[in-house]
Length: 231
Image (tube, rainbow, N blue to C red; front, top):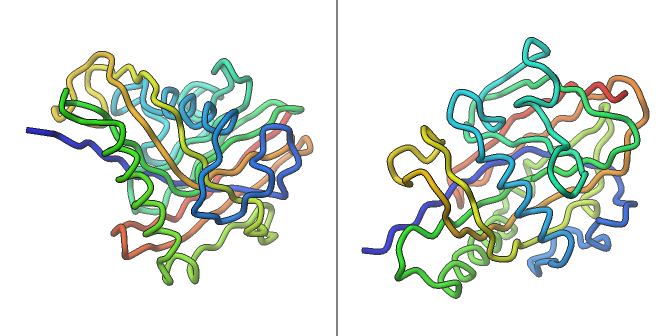
């Protein structure tokens, strides 16, 4: 029997895309970007899911009691871009995080992943699902009406958000992962998609990033606030 493992997470931030790794101002398009953006999508998921439940950056609220760069946000991935995690919960969450200056930031607005757990799964099936998921989100009137994204209290332009699909990549699932018993520990192939934002380096100091949205078509909503110290 084919088994499909899907995880929807979200977080979001943005300013005007002005960095080399941005998606050429793709905006909220149903057509995915690939290349470097797609590689960042894969790297983000590898980072986001490498820790077990209880130590994972996609869970709950957290503050500076956890060392910066541990679970809160991280720049140790090969791309050198600093990642912030989303959330697997619809409950409001508040995160406090420290990121270095002169570093680009990469975040999901809304995203999902397909993990291959059966030899009968095909890349075509995965792509069809991922494409259908994003089209449903983008066509959701409630999503488009309720999506509110601010950085330091200023609304973010929708043109700064772009879709990107990952290539096929290897995901190392730890023991006690967020997938629970549905996915056994070890290496799995995966593919992912989403709406993402690449931010140029923010000025040193304190910043607040907030996102809220609801999408009945996928049965999910988000309310996430990041208090980010850059420096």
